[in-house]
Length: 291
Ligand code: GUN
Image (cartoon, rainbow, N blue to C red; front, side, top):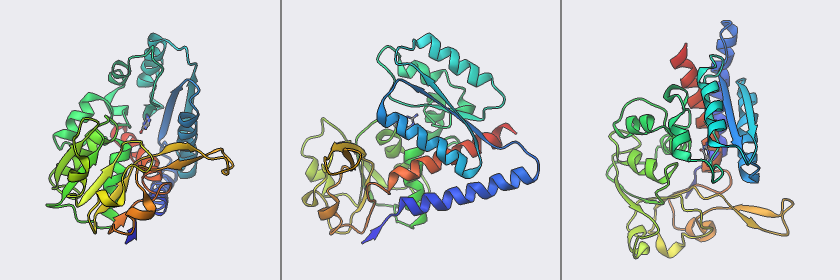
């Protein structure tokens, strides 16, 4: 069994990006600049955005974090987006999700300039991705592809089962795994909350990508021998013994599933760190598109 070490691979990627930034600086060029809008006070979202800002510093990017109150109106947010779209200093930006209830997420995501949409959430970029055109691929699916690539995990002709159909992970992942090329060329089944007898489906999978958000959902008896297991779950589970009062728990019962798997991602230290590395990669791409 091989652990797909997202922490190590993401560090490698950050070092590669930092080297690119160093070259830009040596040539007197402007370094990439990422902005992040966060609306409200959700603890997990604040932590994620803080990690994104820290990662920018680490590779030498400029970063701007924009905090807006929980009562922000849709118009106020759209105005802020307009400002970032028109600010020539910003190469790319993200709006951390989820947004408060008074705001229509789809409307907001459609307002982002597709050339600055480093999350790859704009319908134009999502469509390009589905049509195999060059574009920003959403960071989490992009990170999973990169992990599979760097560990040379065979995907061609394999049966990939994706658990979850979210716009951010499950849906794009299912498209990407079935695309031509590597990693891709696999036969994809998408499962979700209305899927019947999910064990019958997962137990036929060569590759399982679980993005459900239910701690320890995937048990050993749901998985065949030598399956490749990608765990996208990052649920906070209360734990009095942990200094933070919670532990980050994946969708996969790691202890038991890892005994059957050929490759498996840990939580934490698997997919999570890859997401941030690929956001940086998309920002570098946005900067290249603009200059
Ligand atoms: N919320 C959960 N994942 C993500 C992500 O990748 N990007 C943004 N903007 N919000 C998220």
